[in-house]
Length: 348
Ligand SMILES: *Cc1c(COP(=O)(O)O)cnc(C)c1O
Ligand code: SF4
Image (tube, rainbow, N blue to C red; front, side, top):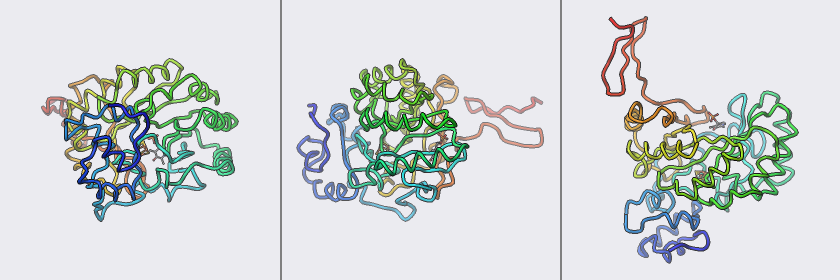
């Protein structure tokens, strides 16, 4: 069954057969706190016979979200501390996030910005707020890259996107505009000629970072939407969150990375889940994550290797947290190969 519109309420999910009626009260409590949305595309991907379905796990709310642990935080990666003007996060010297919109076509149950996104979230930047954000960027020649995220910037109409892109076109020191989005996967038809024309409006180099977490998300329609973007001249990279019960398996993760490469998307980041409220059921220990990531090295193409990163809580930025293959110092090292065998460097 394919729904004609997005499912956004606990009751919709019961009618669609995605949650059992006895869970309705607890799911309503989840819905009071965190936004829910599943596009028809996502609903059609869910295997209702599989109680552990990795697509359902990402998008169908779970009573476990009502559990918040003491180390979880409403702003887990410290966006607020680095926000000089509304809609801008400036943590690194040469690049800023521009959060023009806080709406997404789907709401991921593990979202690190779950307290800020959604219909009750921070909304869309008003025209004067957008002007102030662009003025901040214009006034700082060190800003080389602007990263549109949110929310999902590709929910904006082509008309509004084009207006933002024209604003960026007027700032000569901005060379790169990057979009972080789930739209090509969850609403592929949005990637049409008018959207592509809007993305070209700045005349800058535009990169698209696609967020996807399971190989089944990379449907023919999703791949075709990505092909339209790549063919239009936008290089693509991927972004995945390492999630318990979704992709915490080297075979699944490796298959996902291969799907990306087959779609001309270079695997970029694999994120350790952030300490967002009510997401403990998705997290694993970093050591377990390192084992999964290490299992990719050597066994699948180097093109398929993502960088495993953690956003350090409190706003300290991202750190690469993959296991190092090398140990030792003072000119005498031990290097492990992809089978786990150790070799001296330089050889004895
Ligand atoms: C993740 C992030 C970026 C982008 O980092 P890259 O390593 O360039 O992908 C930029 N700004 C902020 C605030 C971020 O959290
Ligand atoms: S698309 Fe991104 S911002 Fe939106 S709910 Fe998912 S993780 Fe959060």
